[in-house]
Image 1 (cartoon, rainbow, N blue to C red):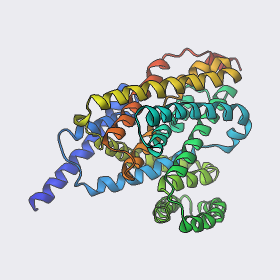
Image 2 (cartoon, rainbow, N blue to C red):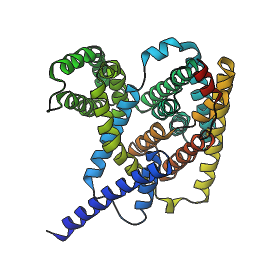
Image 3 (tube, rainbow, N blue to C red):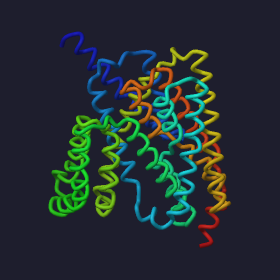
Image 4 (tube, helix red, strand yellow):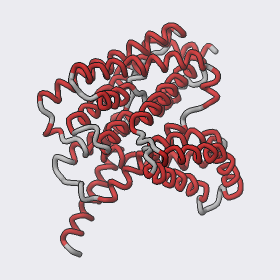
Length: 380
């Protein structure tokens, strides 16, 4: 075996081992696996060069598509309809207030362009719907009205983040218009096609229904890139459209989550970590990170807690802390910004560090929440 090829194989095995160790560490410590995978990627760059691993780039891109598909998939239209007024109010404030603060700080304070400032605003104003959903489910809070309202508000934040990213990164033209005109009826018919395929071919050893979803994901991603729409946007919409269809097939839903969260997503988070070189962080970068952290976390808490207090005072502090879970979408926004050339390494590192640091807040502050919410749920 040639020396260079042997080195690539050895490095690939080492990276795979790092992913496994990061997952074990997260389970032992009781934190999100995404955090340990990103930290593992950051540490990895200090010792080895992973730039020659083509499979890592490919799987990381597929992980991005999978995460965005699952983010759209987590949006439950029934929840949104039941508590639409309170959820829309809390979600809108939770996104727009920190977005405005971060945008003004970056544009006026740090002298960045309006587009870059807006991208930073989106990345630092989002909330991870998947993590909010997981937290509420773990604490058994989804059955009550309060839990449903919080989940609905997180959906609104996710949707506003996605709309903002689509408007900011869309390279609009005639090809885009033609794609959208064709995509609308296709998305309308997609649930029916999916339901027919799941009914006719579901349950076989060939896992055809899972292949169908992965084909949709890859095909739409490739096509959207060619017409000036980022693949993350289309993947989110595809997940949103197919959510009710897939939820009717629980076994398929579990298989899809298993493939995305156990294989593709860890590679994406590790790759995001390898994109951050901590050796390049200087005093200016540290100051930028500190300022953005204070603004993003402070305004996110104040806006969410203030809006939640109007509709359900008991949920105010809980929602304000919980909505500082950014992780997935914040990292995706930073990664996309780096890919398209809007962010340099310093700005990318600032977003990544703020996302990681703020993700620790819910884990620390809500770990031992006795929760009048839980008591209220039990009384019911």
